[in-house]
Image 1: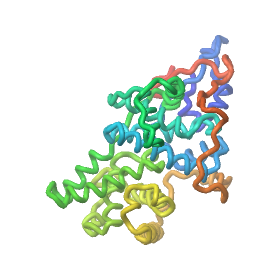
Image 2 (image 1 turned 60 degrees about the horizontal axis):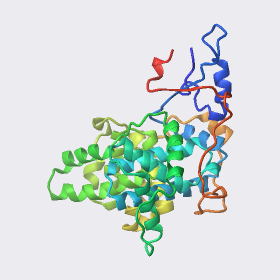
Image 3 (image 1 turned 60 degrees about the vertical axis):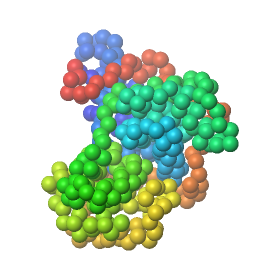
Image 4 (image 1 turned 180 degrees about the vertical axis):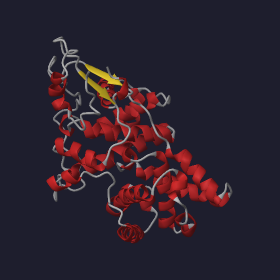
Amino acid sequence: MALTDSQMEDVSDADAGGASASVSGSGFGGPSIGVIKSGRQYLHESTIRRKLAKLETDLSRDEAARLQGVQLIDDVRNVLQLPIITYIAACGYYHRFRLEIDPKTYQWHDAALACLFVACKSEDTLKKSRDILCANHNIKNPDRITAPDDKGSKMLIGLERQVIETLRFDFQVRNPFKILAKIIKAVLGSDEKGSDFFVEAFKVGTDMYKTFAPLKHNTFTCAFTAAKLTALMTGLYKDTFAALDPTEYYTREEWVAEVMLDVLDLYTDHYRSTVLGQEINPQAFIDVKIKVNQQMESARIPRYQNFCSECERAGFPSPSSTDLGTSPASPAGTNSTLKRGSKGVEGTYRFLFDADERS
């Protein structure tokens, strides 16, 4: 019986060869059956940090690449007039891709465009690779507008395969905006005040995808947090949303608090890179963050849920004090084709949607 990579918690691809060797054959001395891979819908904070540590990623450079990549996805999406679900999918794919693949082997903007290309296919908002590359070129060079051509398409298609394998062929996308609309309608109604509040909450929800919060929590938690955080930061119906019981919306107070602080960290540190941050005084974000921290301390809620205490004692990589806000190092040349491991070392990859179906 082969072990899946979900069972071998956070085993890197570099270690997959050892894993496949340990499960070689069917117990009768046969050839290796390879490595079975299955997708994971959610990742804990400690899992994310371990993945970054294994990649020896500088956290400040990783954060810069994460923000710039998501912003590029959003810019190209707006030019191509793609729906929000495609943006959600592309951001999720981009975050997962960067947690698995060494950032030295590709350029962050190529990875962002490749993830948007895959998201267009998975969400049935088909755009050709040349359309995406053309939109990206026109954004960077507004004085030299060009028509779509096939230049660079091979690079994008090459990265597409890596993105799909990183996702384990699991293209499920969770859309919190539908739930967000229902929460606001239930609380404020469907009249003008509900519509106006949803516009602001939509901005918070969009900014949320510049963090890892959607990888850690479900749609109910993300939607409820977006509504509650919008009320706190804008002052609109603050008491109304503060009185809501999270359990009635299939979430918990500690989950909401973790997502809140993830988003508030984004607003306090990088408010210029957010939609809502350009409209609100930065001091408002600091005040709300202090208030949320005080509430968590009084309720004795830990900063992160399901956090690995052993990992915390061992230590995680800390952000570098240099190169803040710079883009990550790019390899020489413009080709972002990733090299696979030596043939026969890792064995055959087998992808399963349900880990319990392995045999």
